Structure formats: C-alpha cells, structure tokens
Length: 476
Image (cartoon, rainbow, N blue to C red; front, top):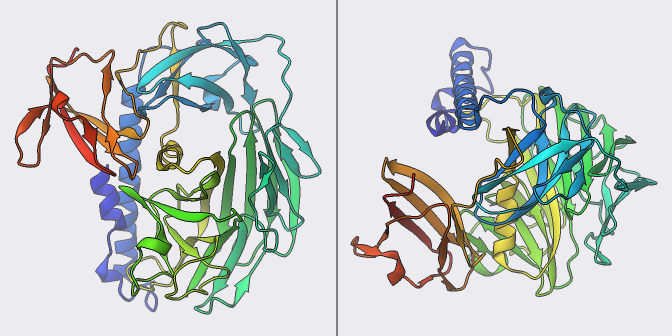
C-alpha cells in the first residue's frame, strides 16, 4: 500500500512541460501511470481492511465495535447502508439503551461509549420507545445543550460557543470561509457571494446544516456542518465540484479564532511546536505544515483545529500577509489546494474533492488530548457484524499514563510482536504497562548502545520520545 502511495505522490520530472504541453502523449501517459498507483494503493488497502474484518455472519442484530487506539474512547460509529439495519436503538452489554439514527445517505450512526483501548465491545440493535431530544436546530443554529454553533448569512460559522466561551473573532469572516485566488496575486481573492442554507440531518445523535453555493473556481460547493449529541466537537465536510482550470490558482479555507492569550501549537509528526517560539529568524513563516492539525490554547482552555485532509496552513490576518515575520495572529488559512508549482503535477485540478475539518474546544493545554483527537479523525471506531452481545474482546494491555500512546503494533514472526510507544508530552513521563489479554513471557527493548534489556529496568520516557518494545512468546 505505502509503496504505491509514495510512487503516486512522488515528483514526475517528465511532466516539467505539463503546463504548456499538457495534451502531448508523454504527459498523458505519465498522468495515467500516476493515477494507476493511487488506484492500486486504494484497492490493496480495501482488500486488507476487508480481510481483517471478515467473518461468516450475514444478517444480524449484533454489532462489534473495535477501538484500535490505546486509550478509552467515546465516539461515533458508522454502519454502512448495505447492512439493512432495522431498529432505532442500541443496547450495550450493561443494559444501557442509546439512540440509533438513520441518515439521509442510508448510513446508521450511534455513539459507542467507553470502548477500552485495544479492545472491542458488542452491541445489540433494538426497536424500542426511547425519549431522546434531537440536536436542536433553530434559525441556522445547532445546539446540543453544551455547544452552540451558528451559521451566518454568508454560510460561514459566525459563532461557536462552549462553556459560555466564544471562540471566533467576530470582526472577521467567520470559520470555514472560502477564498479563491486566480493567478499569483493573493490580494485578488474571490469569496462566496450567495448561499442557500438548509437542514440536512436532524436526529437524536447528530444534526447538520448544509450550505450550498456556486463560488469562483467551482461548479458547485456544499459545506455540511455537523454537531453530535454529547460529543463536543464540530465536524465540517466541504465538498467541491471543482472546475478544470489551467494556470495558477489556489483554494483556502479561513478560520479566524479568538482565544484570549492563546498560543498556537502545531501538531507535527513526533511533537508539538509553537511557531512563534521555535522557528528561527530566516525560516519561511508564510507556509507551515502540520501532521493532522493544530491547537490554540491558554493555560485554562483552547480549541483544536483538526485537518485530516490538508497538511499546509498559513497563519495571518489575511492571505500571504506575513512573508517572513513571526506569526502572531490566530487566523488560520488552510491551504486546501493550489496549482502554483506548475511542473511535475497535473495541470488542472477538477472533479469532486472533499476536505474535512473538525473543531474541538477543550479545557487545559496538554499535548496528549490534541494528539489523541487528531489521530482519532483518521482512525475511527470500526464496526463489523457479530453473533452475540458477548463478542467483545478484552484489552491487550493498558498504559497507565495517558500521555504515552501506542503508535503501532506489528508481528515480527510467529512468536514476537513489536510495539512502538510515543510520549506525546513535552515532559518526562513514567512508563507503566498493565498487561491484560496479552500476557508476554518476556518484554525487551534496545538501549542506546543497541543492547537488549528488560523493560522493567526502564522507568520513564523522555519528552516526545519513541520506544520500540519486543514482546516475546506472546499468548496466542
């Protein structure tokens, strides 16, 4: 899978002339070859996914939900529309009943609560009478009882209030505002001028508002804003029907935040950085990359902007304003797509393109909650058909400090597992593992000199440290 992804994403030097000679045979051939790598990667990934979850269960009233991360999770579960689900509620193994909602797409969704790390839990689909209030929608405002999200007349999120705290700079255009730049001049920005706002979903698990428009650069754009019951985050799904436009262009989505005395922290692959503090004098501060998102917080509270589909951002009070100054603003522009490179890639970007964003207010400012939330957006809870409500699996093991997470588990051979741990904190953390379903006879790590030592000799992990553990003679 990864081999084909990398071959698709790699520069193609033969396309140096794709802008001026996009219709020549060599350019077309190379673009088709690159497309094949992407299709092959998707096919391999789907095959592996199906093989792992495969069982002989056909029609059933039971569902098993897997949590592939190392921490407890309460989150949304999506059931495909081809499962032919009949019911309006979910029963867990403790006898608790929760609502099940059918969406306009045919999918069913529910909130799975307290799924332990590296485990699974089973549920039963029921048809019962339950008293559940829908996520409220009044005058283009979503309200789940703890969070209020208002859509303004331009189709942007004009207000986001949680714990009586407003997180938006109301002097600007609102969150998720569309910006289209044709050519290289960033002052030539085109915004949405006319929108149609309506209700898409309205139920006990989730309600959503959809904004439709026909902005510059697109045949059409839809922006769905979702708010879930009990889950205090906003999900944004921007779907562009992009026109095929040759030449330089770019699409940005703006997020003007307002967190009092807030500091920006970028979630990078193996750490968190404050760009004001850690970027040196001569580095580029116009464009910055994130792994899965960023956080703006003070010592008491903050907000996470998760960007699972986009890795490039700008921090400014307007597009391309800062050049090489240090970023001091709380307005984030997500650099969703551009065609400014003008070589090695396709000359235009067209068709259906989807960009997701998630907004999560929170208390405190610890790195771990930012990392965990961002990871969850690309590692959702997974559902498969089950035989009974007792089909769940106990956790493999538990790491007692939530700042330390498992980033991968892979088999080395028939008798060994390799487990990679990551300390998400900028502080030293104590390492303690409670073994559960997995009961190894021996656990080893490599020290700095490459020698294998027993895990109990290591009492702590340094800030942002990575540790590979070898588990020997696992319990099969």
